[in-house]
Image (tube, rainbow, N blue to C red):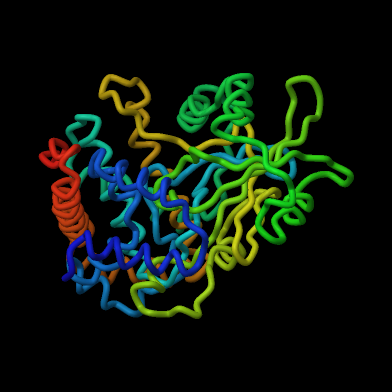
Amino acid sequence: MRSIIRSTDAFEAWMRKRTDISEKLLKKKHRKMSDGAFPFLRATFYRWVEQWPAECPKLASRDQDVLLAVGDLHVENFGVWRDSQQRLVWGVNDLDDACELPFTSDLVRLATSVMLAASAASIKVTADTICEFIIDGYQTGLVKAEPILIPPDRTAPLTKLTRETQEEPKQFWRKKLDADDNPEVDRRDLPKGLEDMFRASFRSGGRPTFRTQKSPGGLGSLGRRRFTAVETIGKGVYDAREAKALVPSALYWLRGQDRMRSQTATLLQHSLRIPDPYFQVHDRWLIRQLAPDIAKIEMPADPDDKRLALAPALLRLMGRETANIHLGSFSRVDLEKRLKELDRDQRWFVAATTRMTESTLSDYAAWAEHHPARKQNATESP
């Protein structure tokens, strides 16, 4: 097995052939990868697909379990969008790395991410507990297959959790319109075709202005170009879109499948979802709406955060939403049959999560060693 350093170099060389990369943002990504094992996991799906067959060979070799998976699934890969009826919907909101993997890879990666995020917040929890909540939600999702709407009940766990994600509108737009981080660009300086893609997402006759993002969020896609289009509706009222460069899944890098295209649109079409009417998938770009009440759920970094009392409910919901994705490929009967086969080894889920957690920690330590300024973080363990 090649080192994480060589793996990163090889993947990034492959990515440069498929889209324009900001080397400055790529260096920022490398620094963030040194911040802890959880951000390292988020940034390195390409390493996951390398390590998965080595660390979990029995699961990886079960061809009967392969479906169109999220791929880069983790605990902060869930968020909120508004459907065509203006209802708030919750679910997986980053499908850039959709690809063909065993359904168990999504489950194990989700559980591994919880282990690492909990460790970062100094929360003591076992792999057994995490896996129990996730698989319980997954099995519930197979039986009660339906998209997840945020209920109007202010006391419901998901309502409480998503309320914490909403930003104050003035502050949100101040950041998005900041001339230093998001300077305006002439429409003629946009990548070819992007202006038309943006305009198709706005009301007819809209006149948006265009900006480039100098400090975008995210980790896995950090380094790829992002642009925003903002239309002024009224005083302090805006309508905005973000465009992110799209490349095929890292799995196709590993397999040398250079002709494969992104599977994001296919996964969206097949999964059990309430569509985001503003989400567009083009050949080389993803476009989505930007708004103060449309965001992802982040794991609390403080072990005293009261939202952690809702964690079991949240993990079950994440399991349910993962089932919604997988039911786009297999029926309930098919997936329940495969789970039953796996349950002959009752600890398959916990064992695989433990192995992938340890593998990620080992790679993270090697990466932190390569970046001495952040070396102290290499002692982190769940």
